[in-house]
Length: 265
Image 1 (cartoon, helix red, strand yellow):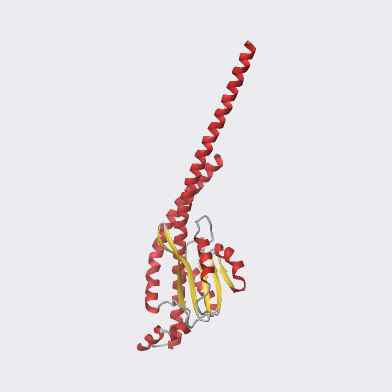
Image 2: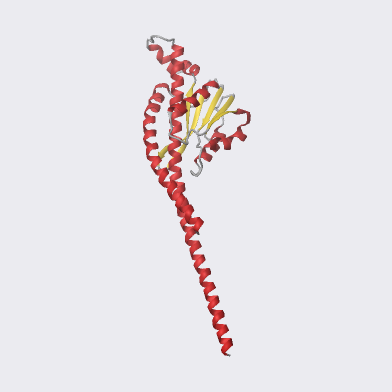
């Protein structure tokens, strides 16, 4: 009973901490969506695998557990979707300890790199830039970020965000549309390469923040359910303890009365 009561105290404290972090995480997500949506409107997405031979998939998970099933959902979703329709080779850059532990055996040789300890502190763009640098080193035609998109405190869903590489961007509609503008300074290919890299970093950062916010919301739910279950367990144990104690007292009284009656007899 003491152990269960102590665990309930811990889960309630963890819920309060997660709720406080959730408020800050929501603010960061809203701010990051503005840039992400602007880049998406300008440069577009890549819903199909047309013209893609190599792909980098970036599943976003957390470093800590006790947050429900969001990490297992991402791992399962990543294995289900595989590569793009025509992608000949898919490599994986995994973010988060839970993703690395859940995917490293399944991915085998396609596992390229992993980044851990990034979600334990305050999310920063510098960490997202490091992940983006690793993705660029894979020299793929496209990169796909898999993360939990935060919708509300009780709703978050696995989401894909695909970023075209510089070559695919130049040959696509955006590369054709930019011909109408006069570019001073660097060549068109260099400008598109810079835009593609920045778009990748922004997408990774947005996915990182969305997943971090979903993690805190899921942890609030998980700790609330744990506290509720712990309270029910404590009530059941208390009832069992009282019944057992009452039965022992009744037995002792019966033995005393029977002994006194035997002596009198």
